[in-house]
Length: 501
Image 1 (tube, rainbow, N blue to C red):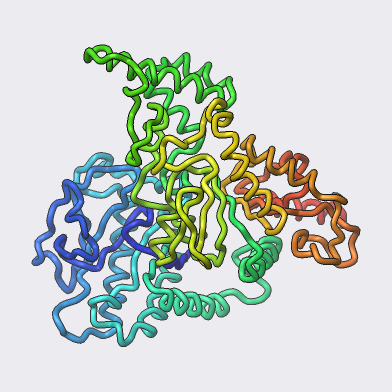
Image 2 (cartoon, one colour):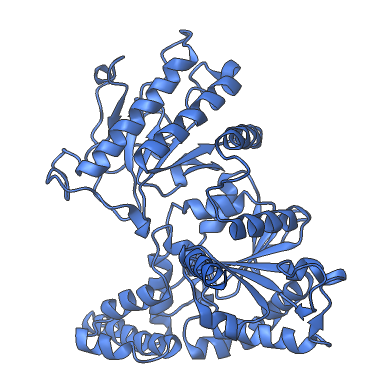
C-alpha cells in the first residue's frame, strides 16, 4: 500500500528512510549532528549512476530505520522532474534489496544472506521518503508535476514488490495536493466493482469519515497503537519490568497467573527492594528522600521511573501519523507515551495534554487517563495507585463520560480490558433512559449499521477497530460496533451465503 501522511520524516518509525542530502552537516536533516557511530559517506561516492548510499556504523536498534542519503540537489543547476524521480526509484530498489538480502556491511544480523524482518511486527516492510526536490532541490516550481509522477511510481513499485511505502509531506498544502492526486490515481485503478477493501469495510470507513468531518468522532487510543511504533504493550511492559526486578524465570511464569494490577504491585515491591539494597550497599540511609526525582521536582517510585524511561522515544508509528491527520480534536488514551502528541506536532498541529497543560480554543487535546512519561509520578499501574488518585481519576472519568454521551468514540489499539474504562462505560450506560434509541431519529448516526426501517437497536456509543475476530467482545459490548480487519469475516459471510442459497 502507498500511504501519504503530513509529518516529519525524521520521526516516523519505518524500516528504511531516505534523507535527500549527502552531508551530515545539513541541519534540516541532522539538527543534532550525525547519528552516533555513523560513518560519513564521501561526497565523491555520489554519482549520476549511484545516487543513494546507506549510512553504515549505526548500531542496530528496534526503532531506528536503515538510513539512506540521496544526491538530489547540485548548486543552481536546473534538473528535469525525471532527475528527482530516478533518485527515488533507485532508493526504493536498493532499500528493498538491502532489507530482503540482509545487507552486506558486516553489521550485526547482516551479510548472512538472511532477510531482515519488518520492524514492530508489521507483515510488510515500510519504506519512507519525502517529496524529494521540493525543498532545496530546485523542483519547487514543478512540485505539482513531480508529486503526481512520484505517486504513480510509488504505486507501481508497491504493486510489484509487495512492500508498503509512506510518502511524508511537510505542509498542509502539499498534503492536500497529494491526497487529491492519490484520489485521481485510485479512481482509475479501482473501478466501482472492485476495491482493495471488502464492501463492509468500505461502508464503515466512509461513514466514519463523514462523522469525523462533521466533528462527531473522538479517538480512544490504546497500547496497540504504541506497539506499532516499537513500544511494548502492557503484557510485554510487565515482563520487562519483572526481569529488571530480578525475578527468576519460574517466578516470572507464576507472576503471569495474576491480574495485571497485581503483577504490577509485586514488581513494584521487588524493584523497591532492588534499589534499596543498592543504596544500602553504598552506605545510604533508606527513606522517602531516596526515591527518584522527576524533571518537575516530584518524587516517584522506581517502577514509575523505569516505565518513563522505557516508553520515552523520539519516533512514532505511521498509525499515529495517520490518526493525527484526521480532523478529530478530542483524544483519550490510557498510554503513558507521547507518540500521538509528537505526530501532531510533526504535522504542525498544536496539541495539549490534559490535565497537564491549559488548552487554547479550537486546538487538539489529549486526555492522559493513566499518566504521562513526562510526569512519572502520575503513572498508574498498580491497584494502590488507582485508589490513591481516585478523586483525580473521577474528574478525568467525567470527561470521558461526557464524550461517550455526546460523541462517537472510535477505539484504536484498545483491548477494552481496562477496569477504569469499564466503570466509566457502566455509569454512562446507566445514565441512559430508555436504554434503546430509535435509529430513525436523532441518534441514527450512533447506530449507522442499522438498515432503514429496521427495529430500534441498542445505542452504539462507539466503534472498535480490531485486527482479528473477537466474537465474545460483541456479547460483552453490544453497544459497540465491531469492525474486524482480517479475512475471516469475509470467508464466514460467503460460506453462509452459499449455504443459504
